[in-house]
Image (cartoon, rainbow, N blue to C red; front, side, top):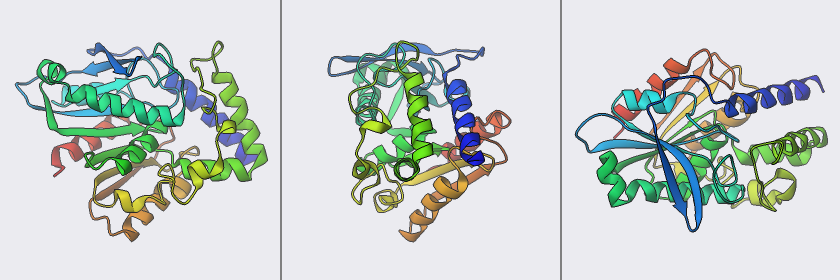
Length: 293
């Protein structure tokens, strides 16, 4: 009981932190990504240089915020790497409705944005070096997308949620389920920043869609689809939301079992917010990007 309450308290705090628009230097440019007729609001952190420039699609946690992801986008830009962030469908000022499947479609739209000739010219994008990465919810979504898209060869995850593990706990633990449902209700428009689709909340999904044998939301079960990719996993030893024991290390072991030989795992002595190590965290990502094949 105590552990579950502590988990939910910190999860709630991390969601609030994720949603804050922090006072920080912001050199980004407003962008709009179009998916069908849905417009997604985002930010592009352009790097200096003649190009072509490596470009990172950087996914927010949930529900995210309207600027950066742990300050990583700004740091990447300062290091000569473009970074693109956006708000998921149905969150903040983006059109549409939020759902897990819509997030996957949003990522595809962001990838297409980075491939569009006008944007390639404007931001000097190296279309052969488009990297996918994300934090928390976004980290798990990045790995799921990479599992289904061979063109994504480099992917990083910062405390990325294994949604298979999340939903296993959700469906087997009634107290946990009730607490998560309460948090999602608090995030719902108009009191929160999210407009959910009919299947967008955990209580609306079917267990087999996320923890079933064929689900690529279950990262351990789709490790074979990720085994050939260059992967960076970053976790926090003091993270009680996306724990090293239940999310990060089991995925790492599953990748090892599939003979994945391009996987790097790094753990910081910090919690889910990474407030104490954000400069070091960005440095790890930049070093990994610089030395990626």
